[in-house]
Image (cartoon, rainbow, N blue to C red; front, side, top):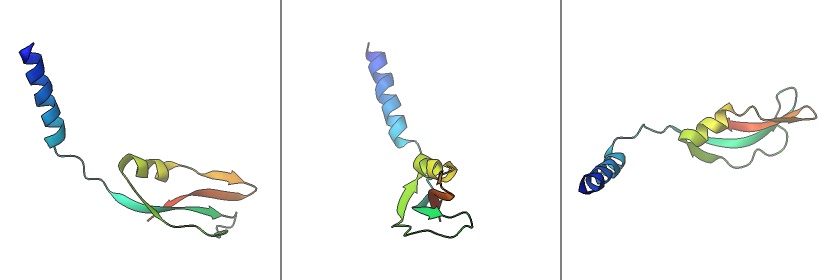
Length: 75
């Protein structure tokens, strides 16, 4: 039983002390563009996204309604 506890504690310490992958962060804002690529309306304020959240925003194809496409644009 003591071995299991020691292994669990070591695993937890390893998880917290292991170097993590560097997270690239970008500022993304929700932008609506018409069929010609022109911005429609106010794009709003940018929000910073990192890691998995950033990847999800970058691969999202957006939503098209009536020729206007709304999606996140990151820089």
